[in-house]
Image (cartoon, rainbow, N blue to C red; front, side):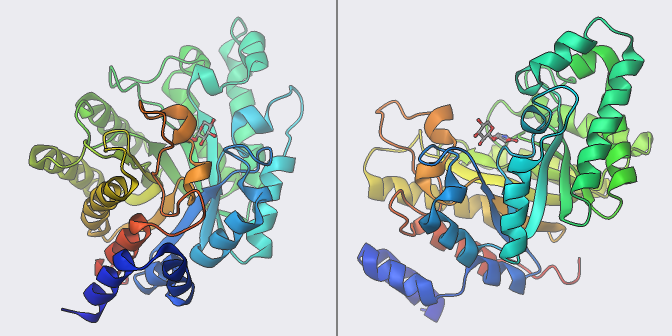
Length: 372
Ligand code: XIL
């Protein structure tokens, strides 16, 4: 048995308090990732204290982020519905609170997201103002907005999710939104061009949640067509963000794994780099018993990460939260038995779980990115 395997076994057997203490002195996930040329981090929310998005005001939570992460991303605070909530002004206060924390703690910062082509995430005033107006008005607004935000965070955000989730998973076509209705593909093109103009040094990412789960074929095909179009029309896009909201019960099938690999291979063959931008493991498909659930979550997570980290152009691994009590899944897809979800590497009481070990093991097993 290797030393690492022995330690892994030990970790599962240790009581929680001693496990936490043991992990305090163990290398951080960020350190393990850095050894392979990967940035490890998490989303951080600056919502109301005590709510699902209230991480920034929780010192215990942020201590874990400080210890484990090399990069953070704003969970909601740099979205259009926050920054452009009111007409005529850009509100950067909430985004800045995340950016300032990153700066003060020596962390890198990803930006999420400049254009979310979805009615639900588009400020109502924007739809009212531009729906019936000539298209040029909205085109100018998109250019100014994206450019304005990219300029504000220039030199601070090193990688932007410029466009988020613009493929309708049911059809594989562009989502039906204000931007889509008025501008079609031009909305997306304008966003990437404005991001490049105002933040030329930041990586530009198209981010989406197409998955390896069943039923994702149309979504994946639509994303591939979009990425091909970017290349054909020379839209300046550097990478695909794989959100990676995976789940117990959707990833253990060899056919799905083969189809997912074919998708990722097609993306890298076009010259795109890869990022895991929002990793978590939905446990709705797992039994109630916490130990069994944690084991299944860890096994599914490890399988996915082993596969994805084998791609040497994948150099970011971000979780969508680190501590279960702050996972968006508690509200988005609650379990049928009403028990809280356990989708993240730390439990609701801030104790590391088997998923943390699975992430560490996957990072240790990953090939170095140095040659990529
Ligand atoms: C989620 C946040 O976690 C929630 O707080 C918010 O209410 C909705 O958005 N894909 C994305 C993220 O790109 O922005 C989403 O974040 C999760 C799914």
